[in-house]
Image 1: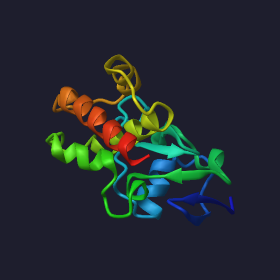
Image 2: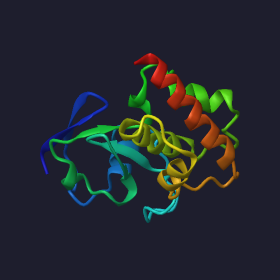
Image 3: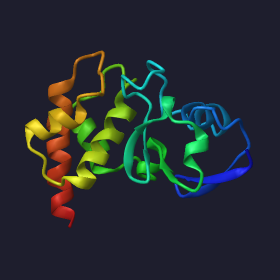
Image 4: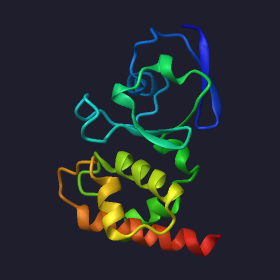
Length: 155
């Protein structure tokens, strides 16, 4: 398969088997290691990235389905790691082991892109499929609310 996709604003040639999961293309071919392998079944959310702005699980998304699409990884969310969600994560001491955090942040960014001021119930619903082994769910919710507030002030 010799085609291309845009990843974090740069064109990347796809010269792999079309069935290869995006996760492995990102990690093994491009060395974007912020996206994590968790369950391999699309159930935990550690591998969440954006495809055309929508949160998707990269472990179950084949590269053949992504030709001519825009992919954003945690590395592409903010050039300097200063996206309001990343700042709010630190302000609220969300990370413990840190393993799920990239997927959590990417899912939250997708939520805030379509709902700038989500209620706590809307946050719970949107984040439901992202598992945190350390159980920092209340801090995650607080960080999302803080980031939404910050983003609303930037507009």
